[in-house]
Image (tube, one colour):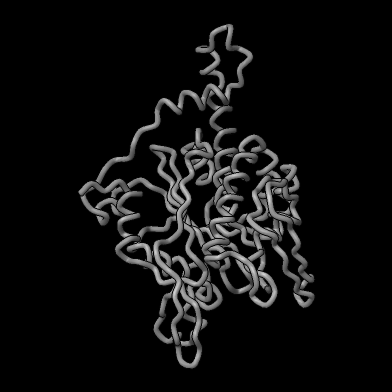
Length: 328
C-alpha cells in the first residue's frame, strides 16, 4: 500500500476556515449595532451566538429552475473541486456545492478509479480519473470532473497537504469513530514503513492512528478489508468526517490555526472572507455527503484487466437536479 492519507475531512476544513475568517470580520463590523438590540438579561451571551440565531431565521430555500441547464447558468451556488494528492495522482476528489441561501453543502465524493477515456491516453491505468492530475494538473482534473457532472461549473480549486491532518486531529484531542473490523496491514517498504493494527469498536483515534484508519483499504494478500472495496472505505471516511465536524465545530480557532498552512486554493483573502460571511450559521447538519452514482466493474484494456468505477449519467443528472432545485 503506497497510498498517502485519505483526507476526506479537507472539504469541511475549508468551510471551517472561511466560516471563521468571515465570522470574525462580520462580528467585528456588526457587533456595535447588535449590542443596542440586546436586552439586559442577554448581555452575557456571546455576540456570535446572537448573530447565528438571527441568520438562522433568514435561511431560505434556493430559487427553483425549470431545467438543469438553466440552473447551472443562473444559480448562485458556489462549487469547489477539492483534492487530496498522492504524489502525481489524486487520491481524494470531492465536488462541494454550497448554497448561500439555505447554508447547505452537498459533497459528492468521486472514486479515484472512476473510468474516463481521454483521447491519446489509451493505457489501462490512464483511464482512471486519478491519473489526470499528473498529466494535466488541477485544471485538467477540473475539466474532467465538470464533464462527468453534466458540465457543472466549478468556481474554485482547493488542495490540502496530507501532513496537516495528523496535527489537526491531535489539536482536537482525537476523533471518535467506530472501527468496523480489525484493521491490520504491514508494508515495510513504504516510506516511512507502514504498520496498521487497529482493534474494532468505538474509540478515539489520535493523529497517527487516524491517518492509518483513513489509509486502510485491505489487509496483506488482499485479505479482509471492506466488502465493497473502495466504496466501503469512502463510507468509513464519511463517518470519520461527521465525527470530525462535530468536534471541530467547537474548536474553530484551533482547527483553522492548525490547518491553514496545509490548504492551498485559487481564492484570495477577500473572496474567502466573502464566502465566510455567506457560510455564517452553517452547522454539521447542513452537510450532505454522497458518492458519485455508478458501480464498480472489471474491464479489459489491452492486455490488462482492471477494476473501474463506471458512473451512471442518468443518476448523476437526477442528483444534480435535486441539488440545484430543478422542478419538472
